[in-house]
Length: 418
Length: 98
Ligand SMILES: Cc1cc2nc3c(=O)[nH]c(=O)nc-3n(C[C@H](O)[C@H](O)[C@H](O)COP(=O)(O)OP(=O)(O)OC[C@H]3O[C@@H](n4cnc5c(N)ncnc54)[C@H](O)[C@@H]3O)c2cc1C
Ligand SMILES: [Zn+2]
Image 1 (cartoon, each protein chain N blue to C red):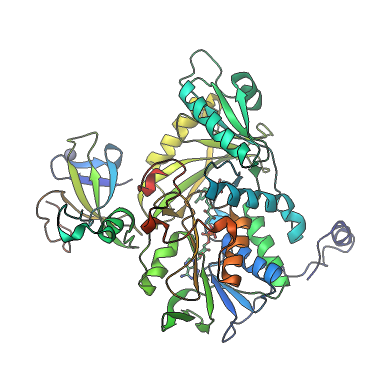
Image 2: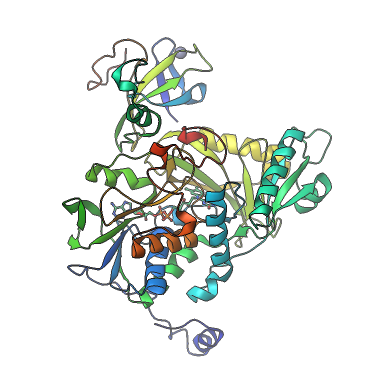
């Protein structure tokens, strides 16, 4: 496979772009592997990459029911941050952030990671107090955080409503300067290509249908392309988690919900940051293609439909116009949805399961894109060593039964509220 | 857009409702032997999360303020029927609305 470099680009320019080869092979499934990862989204692909890279496990396959990156990894709004407060989340997401900072080099693939900062706005004294608390917790964990005054915040989002009439006046905000965005498809493709180069088989259009289990040990997976054996199997299927755990008789603290995102017609460069509204659910950035990318809250009801309804589009637009009135003049180009694995405490699960050799990666809610490298790193660790990394030690499946929940917002066991 | 046929008000836009959640959960009874930790754990945290017909509760918050039990397909969003949340339900397999 071609190694991408400035020279390969120049060579391509001089030779009619004939030097490019396929980014990854399209192999036939083998009868068995050392390990199989189910789900060719960001997390599955990253897990395969780190299994091969960090643990020398190259006899592995990723099986994906559609094409690589057809799930949430290609549907999200690309925000990357590590502004968490609780111990179990903070160190995990910060590890992910450190991996992001080197990812394009590590993968030899430009994931267009842009540390443009992310600003959460506050609109009341109470909200600013809450932000000071979160910011202090972050700094104690060694994560960058800055509390901004109203003037500083407005400098970062100059187009926000600063008038006397603003429905929710801006009091200030909490900024994570190292946060930002990355090109989501490139993350899937970069991990896929790098895993493939280390010998991983990427099996597309290969749906996991059932499992082979003997004496409570995982032995293989029945797929639409035949039964494939492996003593270690990792599940990383996001919103589809319970459709597979049902086959294993495992009960899950997860509900599947839909989340929509929207993009406007392309504009000239206008906003070079990421901002979230504190008085309603709305967040905004501008893509390199010029479109304003924004989204809001879940539609709110269980759904596997990968499409949403108009009331939420309307609601998001209202919040957007309250924050940045100018976007009322912009036309919406597209809106779409993905299916989220909403966990009961809003935090993820990277864990062993009651079945030996079966590992679970799920419960990403709507924040799993930023977790992609960290999740792959920790899940690979958990699978290779049959024990968690210290950073995902708290993210167990049995924490709900033990009462050790990780509830950042204190929202309680209501998946739609996280 | 979902249209929920409230048993008291008739067909209404989903925007008038708040989603409550899974309508099959049974709260363990206080004082019965069900009050062991496992029953409460399952009631609080475990959901069936089907990909298909789902029995769920919506609250007609901006209407009559009654709770409505709805059978809705989570894959197609099609609504098969609506009933009062309390009391006996009609035969949910038939999808007829009371
Ligand atoms: C609209 C939207 C906006 C978002 N915004 C952000 C954001 O700004 N920042 C952020 O951090 N996160 C965001 N997220 C969340 C993030 O995208 C997800 O949490 C994350 O992508 C989930 O992990 P994944 O990439 O592995 O999932 P996916 O890409 O969904 O991967 C799962 C894969 O499993 C496959 N699969 C399912 N069932 C089977 C089967 N039986 N056999 C084989 N394969 C199967 C699916 O086809 C899919 O490709 C957003 C999500 C959405 C929908
Ligand atoms: Zn009513």
